[in-house]
Length: 277
Image (cartoon, rainbow, N blue to C red):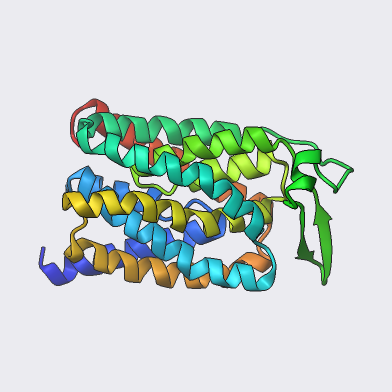
C-alpha cells in the first residue's frame, strides 16, 4: 500500500468518524482508534494521540455552529469541565505506563457499559426549573424547538459532576473524548434534553482532550503523518454533521449510537484479549 492510498483511507475513515461524532456527541475517537489499530496495526498509544487531536478538531468544528444555534449550554459545560479536565490529566499519565492490550480491553468494556446505560429510559420531569443547586448556579437553560425556545431544568448536579470526573479520566486513558459518558451524564443523570446533551458534550470534549493531549505530545505519541489526514477528515465530517443535527430525530441518533459503539467494543475486546493489539 502506497502512502497516498494509506492517507486517503485514513481520510475517509476520519470523515465518517467526524460525521458520527458530531451527530451523536461521541467524538471521533470511537471510530478512529479501532480503524488505526485494527485496520493498520498502528500502536494504540499513537492511535490515541491522533484520536485526541481528532477529538479537538471535532469539537471545534461542530461546537461553533451548535453554540450559535442555541443548543449548547455553555455555563453547564464550563462547570462540568472542572471535573473532566482534572480526570483527563490523571488518565493520560496512567495510559503511558499501562500495557496496550489492557488499554484495548478497557476501551471495549467501557463502550459496552456506556451503551447499556444509554438504553435506560428516563421520564420527562414536568418541572423545568431544575434542582435548587442548579438554579443557584444558573445551569438551567433553553433550546430552540419548532421555532420557539423550550425551557429545561438541570437535576442531580453532584451525580453529573462525579460522572464527568470518570469521563475525563477515561478520555485521557483511552483518547476517545468520552463523549458517550458525557452524553449519558447530562442526558440520563442530569435530565437535560438529548439534543442539548449531545451538543454540550461536543463543546466539552475538545477542552478535555486538549488537557490530556499535552501529555501525549510531551511523550512523542502524536505523529503528524497520521494526525494530519485524521484532522482534515474529521473536520469535514463534523461540518456536515452540524448541518444535519437540527433536522435529525433523537430516536435515530440513539440507534446509530448503539450499533456503532457495540460493534467497535466487541472488536476491541477480542483483539485485546488475543494480544493482537
